[in-house]
Length: 239
Image 1 (cartoon, rainbow, N blue to C red):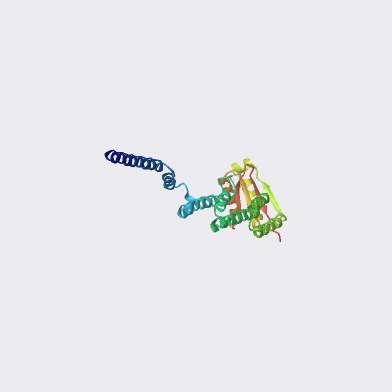
Image 2 (cartoon, rainbow, N blue to C red):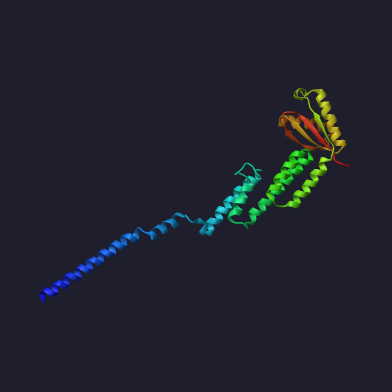
């Protein structure tokens, strides 16, 4: 009887020890397995798209960069660092983003504004280039079509080009001042617009000053551009 009790006692002890060993082993495996790994992924923020707050912050940053590019007139160039590409990136993530969609339309309006400014001073090729880029955006076709018609009408308008002698211009000679005065009077009498092509901004401002003084301070409408070959373009409006 004593032997039987001793045998049972040893058997129960062995079972208990074996059971304890299995639980420890299981605990070690579990602590290094998937549950802890999943927790660490969440802590690192590897799934930001699942967090609406983080998602909106990312989109807000992207929209800010797009607007900065727009204000800097980086509308479609340079590649990868322009307003159009950045607005499109937002729409790839959130197709119904109203701010990005308006930004795309604003790019078209800006190109049309640039085209109209070029038309006013007779830079028709530049105007066509701006409208060509606006078409690539693919929205606001009616706005672009109206600008196209304005460009077509402007191409029929008379334009006079006066080449300015570079040396006489540098010397600011009397003959040059007389010529500029005559050009200013023509611009005033024909209610024309002008584009001064000068080698420097200071030179362009001097040309405009001489022309304006020749017409008694009458406000001449035009622009100044930098060019190695000085000249004045006059655009005479159609009657």
